Length: 254
Length: 306
Image (cartoon, rainbow over all chains, first blue to last red):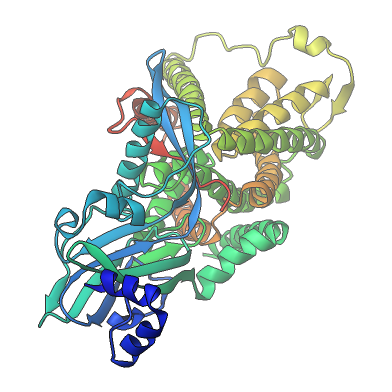
């Protein structure tokens, strides 16, 4: 319905103005979803054992919701062990460039029922469709094997998850989804994208950034270890010397 | 009580770490060894990344050896000249070792090299310990058997740069302790140990040092070499976790005191047989990780450029 109207308005510009005035909806309104997260910052502190975030929002009218969460991108190496003289040794490896350190997809229905594979492919929705590029000169078949192994390893570390269809939509408008982060969650900036599909077509997307960072003493120690490595080393030695000396003194008296 | 370790980037139970430190400390106090060769594999078994286990353990060994080194120093049981030569060797070796460590980490072979080093050295030392102490045990029951010579003169004693080590009553080539120092330094860097289990036998059998100064001198060297490893691992690889090291230190200093008291009531040979068997058990466990077929042949490496 919308497409012929557009065509019309293009052909007859003046008519288009009139259509606009008459209140014909603009295509793919950015206002059709509103979302928010229970927090925009995941803080890793002393007692951190993982975190769970709540994503919630509302849509204008009925549709299917797909939520993707993508972690910071970095180069990731996946290695295959080979048996050499009875011992397992790391052999060939493939480096995937700009691979998301964390990836999760959740939807209100199984992805296959929401949109055609080509549409999902184009939007890179689903852990099997994310863009993993490599400069490796190995054959396509070998790369595919490494790619699958990479996703499998990430899933084992709970950093990637199966495409889940657990989003509940209440009264056709409100939705909520939980996003779990394991204890080994990589620090950096994450992007939470909520897609609204109607009849297999993407109607609207809304992106919300999210940061995962170390806070408090843990952050200070980590930053200090990386920014002032020499001082960190000297302090580590000093602490150990004092602790050892102190223990000797205490127990000599005891 | 879970505690997040900032460098290992994982959460572990603080009480378990204190207990682990206490247990290894107890054994090290009882047997008079550093304990690094037990602690590093145990840390790896509970899931600490091998590189972090090695870097952190070097830091813990500094604390574990310093009180012993000071005690021996006060009693005059340190051959300072010998200690300094060993230390220079240790600095060279550990600096080479950390560079090698960084290189192996980049090419993804560090876990493998750590495991192989453990199997090799724990295997050799464990077997030697058991054999030697079983022999000593038999000798003690049969005191009429002839005593062995203190040390043998070999081609090693014909090397140049002879130095006089008064405290050890030796006039030998400085290259000998220097070489031992280099070798132990490399081990310290790659295995996260003090290296006493290699250095003490080498000092007794290769150099022919009197036993009274061996332990003090080796502890003296270990403090400096593990401090150097801690520094270089921090600078090159950022793999020293202070929080983890502190928990292990607290546990181990307490454990070591209790262990030392228990150990003094046991017979030397029996203690050494027991230690030899523990060493062999750890060796077998590490060897198993090398030969057992992994659940998944693929593994993720540490992230390259962020």
